[in-house]
Length: 53
Image (cartoon, rainbow, N blue to C red):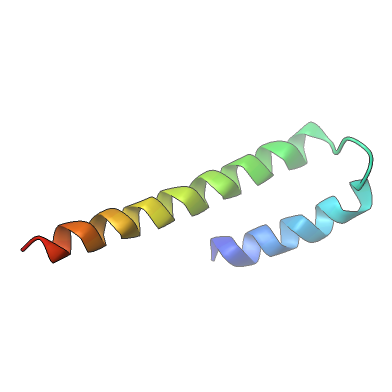
């Protein structure tokens, strides 16, 4: 779900190429990136812990 959200967010950021986007869009992009990284690191940790048992 976050990937779909991030894709739509990227499309909304496209018109601001070369100019600073609104702060709200930057915050939303930061949240989407944080959710993505949390999911990736969580999956890595689960895989590592699962391989130890």
